[in-house]
Length: 110
Image 1: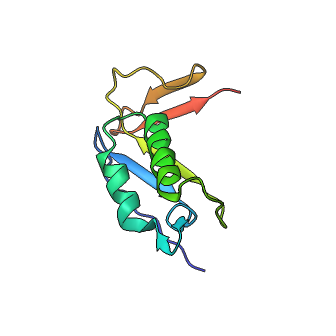
Image 2 (image 1 turned 90 degrees about the horizontal axis):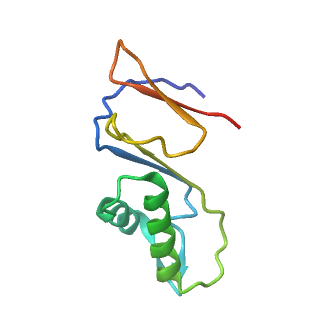
Image 3 (image 1 turned 180 degrees about the vertical axis):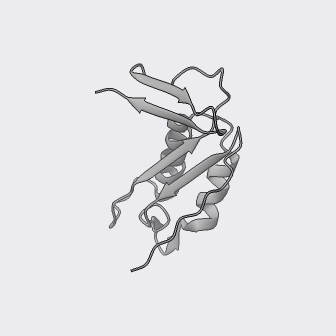
């Protein structure tokens, strides 16, 4: 396989969702949760905190399925570009800004 990389702007207030197909392939009888419903839930979540967004997605998925058993694993990662004044989301996180760009780096000590 050949991969390429691209640099894109990730403005303050932007959110990004990475997920496996297990999130969209949740079923209630013959109806699938699907990408459109996932995007709608992600877009309509008012919080700008990644853990709150993930909590809202899990609640929506669980509510849709009625808690029924699912066949696939479900993995999701949310990235949020918070304003510089926002506190670090993890007690051991250190946020540093790159003076040559608009990027911030988050390091979490274990």
